[in-house]
Image (tube, rainbow over all chains, first blue to last red; front, top):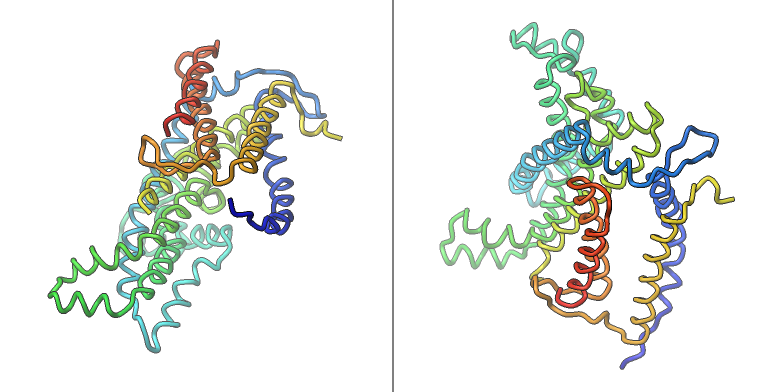
Length: 285
Length: 92
């Protein structure tokens, strides 16, 4: 057996320490909270698995989870194809490349709470540009503060605006890495545009697309700031996604035990979905 | 010093269990390097660490499903989890 140099481990130590303090120890604390009840003052009472049992059977949790899957599914179904189409349409060389790249990157540079505030002001029915034009110029009844459907459309359009660029830029990076020889060979064989996409571009983009979908899945599944600032989870509970519900429970109601149990279930879902997706997509490499 | 972490014996035992399993894997890795990589029954290439991860994640879901569908006591899901873990290390 060849003896390998194990020095690299020392270089990983700082990161391990950092992760231990900002992720592992808080995570362990959450596990401890999830089996106890507290009224503050660092006094804890053993509760067993009650919180988990109650949560798994709670209508409120099921509804928030359903909304979360609906949101994540919808934005993935829009952002991934749209991002790929934009990447295909972007120029490969010349003056317009940097212009396109910078324009695409702009939405991603804006802080999340600013995005929420921008879209809130933009879509308010009487003073926002979009809201005013829709209601008073076009005569379409649109009020995201009262109508659940309008609120849903607004948060989805906001997320598409904010994050499609990520998919587009990653796909673009995959596209420009394809050597010209592939296209020349396709041309000689008389391949159609669809065949070029299906058998050259898509396979070459696969790796970056996997990362793009994974990032968009995790970010959208854990999304909090933007819908919180835009709709506050309303009207009613119609846009209360999982993280907003979790915050209401943990900070609004100060139910630390149930909130800890919910965080752990939330974490388990994110972990399984990400692991399954990544494992299945990279299985044959 | 650790009172803010609100430790309980059952949760401490869970973590001791997980960290001991990781320590055993580390010891095995030093003794037999390479992670015992193989292509298992699902067509996935897995190492010992992957199998432990799948066993633990599977156990979480087995317990949660039982708790949500049937509630306490949890002897049956414990048995199922051990069986699932054995299956992971044996076949996957």
